[in-house]
Length: 73
Image 1 (cartoon, rainbow, N blue to C red):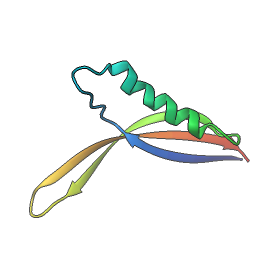
Image 2: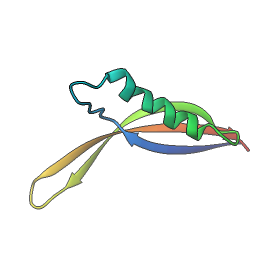
Image 3: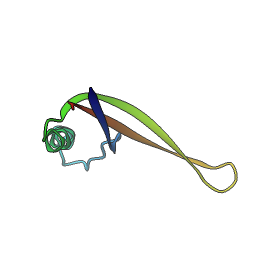
Image 4: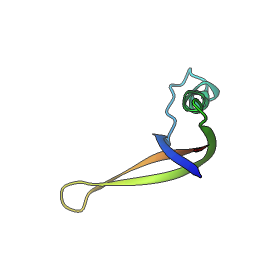
């Protein structure tokens, strides 16, 4: 039987002018490496939009990635 876990992570990368995009994107791989322990393996990444309702009709949309991991139990 397989067990799954989902780890949310920011879906938008924000960098300053002088920063390199590659360095910011590499942080995704750091998260994956941290979670791939104790038999967990990276399975997939899925974009997820979260809409947060505010007062009245206003909404705030946030972008995330759902990193999915799997392990055999």
